[in-house]
Amino acid sequence: QLRNPREPEFQQAVHEVLHSIAPVLESHPEFVAGGIVERLVEPERQIMFRVPWIDDAGQVRVNRGYRIQFSSVLGPYKGGLRFHPSVNLSIVKFLGFEQIFKNALTGQGIGGAKGGSDFDPHGRSNAEIMRFCQSFMNELYRHLGEHTDVPAGDIGVGAREIGFLFGQYRKVTNRHESGMFTGKGVQWGGAEVRTEATGYGAVFFAEEMLAVRGDSLAGKRVAISGSGNVATYAIDKARQLGATPVTASDSSGYIVDDAGIDLALLRELKEVRRARISDYARERPSARFVEGGTPWEVAVDVAIPSATQNELDVDDARTLIANGVIAVSEGANMPSTPGAVAALQEAGVLFGPGKAANAGGVATSALEMSQNAARQRWSFDDSEAKLRAIMADIHRSTFEAAERYGRPGDYVAGANITGFERVAHAMLAQGVI
Ligand code: NDP
Image (tube, rainbow, N blue to C red; front, side):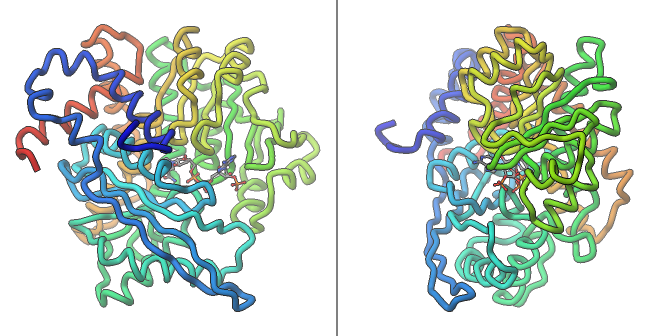
């Protein structure tokens, strides 16, 4: 805390990991002697830079850009870019720190990083977005490369932004280096299923947790927050597995639709018209809009928070529990507060933490890197089968690690322990650097 003052989200993420790995450190004195924890909580490199751009009115604007290259011990730095006004050093560091363990869990040989800017894309024209992305890349390009650092999308960075960012990288480096960015359009080096992977993966993880209790998603009511990339495809896959997703949200509030979310309408509103979630209720008689709220007050069997950090607090958790929730699978990064996680686990709710449950996105990014390196293109079905197998593997390894350390059913501990052990062994082997 002394070293990283005013970084509450980063401290929250570090605290959660350190709490889980205490028994690992006790049984591995070599990790303590090797200074693994002290080294891990300090990013290998932190980059902060000015991003000047000109808006449509001709006015000069200045945002701040970040890239936190946290750990490359298992592979090139890998993690998304977030464009949102709430982005600051604490948020990017918490996300980068989480990414180390998530990426280790995928078993795909990728290090951990995160970046972004406090730029707000809402209400900006295409031309403004493009100028911003180009200015952002004018600095960031020198720190990237397929063997160095491979960014991807996150909040506010979707297909459009990735296109502009990749285009500018190509321009300033004079290299068409497909493997330096993931989440690319499938027509120009992107991989099938990458767009769907995080949402699909969070649903697969829920299905794996339910299977342990001999249950499944079929016939369940599901609450999903957000209406972006992760939420959209969580809704899609939940429906395909026979569940009824009944909510979606954005920062203005949420909608509940007891007939089940109409995915085509949601996508038309959010991806094409770039409208607000309240417009969904205006066009769909079975739905209503609740201004300012979060969907956790709706009675459901399963919840998949897929918007942002700390969006599900202890009161929300108690409401979900009172309404009979049996599983929570985190599509977003750290959407549940520590109090919410404790309440859900104490009540016996199956709880899949983001670093395991939403790892399908980055795992599929690694598949995109493999395809780029081999100049291959795998089919949708083949890629989805690989994603499903990876999620099953992540579930199994986290489940088993929790059992091994006397915390059966505790996926938080299992994910932190598995990720930490993989990183710690590699750090020991590679020396104090
Ligand atoms: P998008 O930008 O596509 O969507 C984000 C959604 O969350 C929007 O509906 C947005 O609403 C809402 N939201 C964002 N910030 C807030 C806030 N402060 N309060 C309320 N609602 C908010 O992002 P993604 O779907 O890509 O990301 C969602 C989460 O999933 C993030 O935590 C991200 O880190 C995580 N994640 C994403 C991965 C990916 O592959 N995309 C991979 C792994 C994790 P509004 O438009 O009103 O802001």
